[in-house]
Every structure is written in structure tokens, then in C-alpha cells.
Image (tube, rainbow, N blue to C red):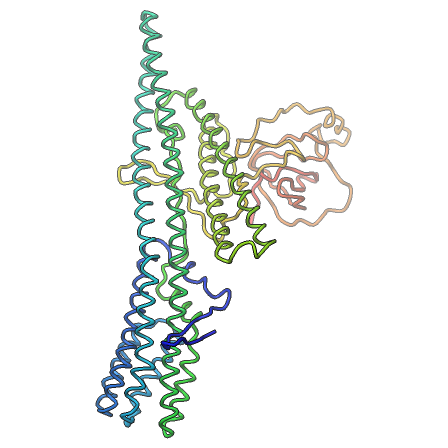
Length: 540
């Protein structure tokens, strides 16, 4: 809705659901700078509009010559517009100015009071509202940059200390292999243990720095979200204020000059047709760099990179310790997120308990919690992959594995980031595809598939009478079922129950039914049974 206060400045009430376009298109530093540049252009445009109205008031005395000059200024102002409906309305105003030649002198004062002054007041108010949120984004961006630098510094220190500790352990092993006094060996071993204790503290500082860097990034995103929301709201008000000004302008001419009524009605129609949502969408498509693509910096531990020299037993022990620490951190974050979900549900069940902004803040906090869980799960997945590789097991499955990218920074150090597309982000933090423990034998999330015992159990030995060689295959005499897809077996699976299907790596199974997310039903070589979904890859 549009209202006008005593100063002639429009008061805007936005329709629900229209103020959320900027936050989907203006991201990263480039998006922020582009949006800030466009906002300044909007301010300059309003100043141009104020100037045009003042000049129009003065040029009432000069008739045709003055109208020609103001039309040129209007054309220049139109080049700063992006939205289609605003451009169309402004061009119609230019046409009107070019055709109009005789205007009464008495109109000059009315134009200055009712058109120029309100747009000036409005422009000054918008600048005051825009400055604090703009400063907040810059502050959060600086804090995020500082946290990134600190994490890189701690990473370098941790890796250096790891190398020094490894050299010390190797030297100790060499001393034990040579005739060396026990006293010297014990003394050197004590020094190694002390270095190991010191390294634990460095590792924790590194992890804390990683978490704080992510919190700083989320803070920057939140500030940018609020900046986008504020600027979109201000842009909506600006377009409506321009529409109000043009409407007032046309109404003056409609009342005073009957010969120009037709042209005034055309201008009124076009100015009323300015659509803020449509023009904002045009701005997003024309100059917006695109939606947010978060880049989450992952934890690059020394022992997780098998290219780094390290004793294998100590590498495995450190990996197991860090896996446990990461799982404990994930559990803590899950409990915190459950608290946010309960708060969100309370807001939904009791709307009067919180205002709309409070509900938006909780939704944003849930999104931040999901982003943190994605990062922690990716860190855990990296550690599990390193552990699997140390044990010569296949890497575990992970739905976000394809979005983990490894690169090198300016110093040549390995840097891993998680870049999950927006359409793939989910609040489900269970990223590993493994069978349900309550239904069948399952794996620890993300662990390599276990080695199956090839010795058949009693249930499968009894199936020899069906001619299946005791492999536990279950045959059905009913007509062949319809297949919904095919899948390729990635890992061998030895059945544990009579209704399960024996599969080997490389087999092509005809998929009959997806019973749930963990167990599927299929047919192989005329035998029908169920098998773990995480052991196969569905073919397109």
C-alpha cells in the first residue's frame, strides 16, 4: 500500500513474499560492491529527479527552450535505470516534456513544493538508512579475512611441529636399533612425549581457529543477507516514491491544462504501472553476479595427507583420535541445532510469542547450524577417507563428496574447501549412505565396507537343494517382475539372511524396488533378493 505523510514522502507497505530477490543474486564481494554501486546510482537518480523537478519549475517561464533542456536531462537520467517498467514510464515522461510547450507561470511554485521537496527529503532519509548496514558488511568482511589469515598461520605452525615431532620419533627409533644407553633413550623418549603433548594443544587451537573462521564467514553472510534485505526494501520504496512523484506531476497537468489531458493520462498510466518486484527482478538478472555459493574452508590435518611423511601406526592412531573428537563435536552441534528447532516450532505454534524478525533470525540460525554441520561432516569424511586409505579399504560414500575441492594456496600448501550448490543444501545432516542398524547389519557412518566371511552359515547351507551352490540366493517361481532401473555393484556383499542377494563387484543388478533408503530389492542371474543400497551405484 502507498500512503503520503505531511512532507509528501510516500510511506510503503510491501506485500508479503516480494522482498527476497536481492539475497538470491548478490553475493560475494563482487555482489556486495555491485549492489552498493547500484544503490548509489539510485540515490543519484533521485537527486537527478529532484533537480529535474526544480528545473522544471524554473523553466515554466522559458517555455519551449526550457522544456527541451529538461527533456535531455530526463533522457540522461533514464540511462541509469535497469528495470523495464521504470524505463518505460520514464521514457514516456521524456516524450511528454518534448511535446509540451506552454505551461502557466503559476505552476512553478506548485512543482517545487509538491514534487521536488518530497523527493529530496526521501533521498536524504534513504542515505541515512543505508549507511549503517553497509558499514556492518564491511566490518564482518574484514573480520572474516582476519580469521582466514589466522587459520593459515596456525595451520603452518601445526604442520611444522608435526614434521619436527616425526623426525624426533624416527631418531628415537634409530637410537633403539643401535647400542645406546637406556638412560639416553628414556631421556629422548620423554622429550618426544613432551613434544606430542604440546602438539595436542596446537591441534586444538587449529580446530578452534577453523570453527571461528566459519563463524566469521557465517557472520559475514548474515550481514550481507540483512544488507540485501534492507537495500531491496529501500529500492522498493524508491521506486514507489518515483511513481508517487510522477503521479503527482501528471495530476497537476491534468487539472490545469485540458488540452494535454490525453498525454497526462498516458503518463499517469505508465507511472502507475511501475512494478517494483518486476524492476528489481530485472536488476538482479541484468547486473547481479548470481546466487550465494558458500566456500567453506575445511580442516587440513597433517596426518590426513598421506603425502606427508609419518609413521603409519602413529598416523592411524592420530586419525582415530581426531575422528572421535570430530564425532563428539558433531554431536554437540546436533544438540544445539535441536534446541533451535524446538525454538522455531514454539514460534510457529505460538505466533504471538515472537515478532516476524525474530522468526526470520531463528530460520537464519538454523541455516547457519546446517552449514556448520556440513563443514564438520566434510571434515569427518576427509579423516575417514584417510583412515580407509591407510587400511587399503575403499573410500566411504558421501553425498557431498563431489563438492569437496582441493587446491593450493599462494604458499603452495594444500587447501580444501566445501562448495555445496544451493539446490543441494539440506537440513539433513546424515551425509553417509549406510544400512539401518535396526533392520540389517550396518557400518559405522563413513567407514569402509567390512571384509565379509566367505563361509556360508547354516541358513545358506540349506539352500543347496535349490541348486544355488549354498551362496544364499533366494529364487522365486513367480513371473518376472518389472524393473525400474539397473545398478552396478561397487563392493562384494555376502548374505547374512535367506532373503538377501549375493553380489560381487562389477555385477549388474536389475532393480525391482527401493524398499527404503538403506535396502533395495533386485534380480541377478534369475535370483531375487535384497541388498544394501550403499554397496551399488544406480545407472542412468
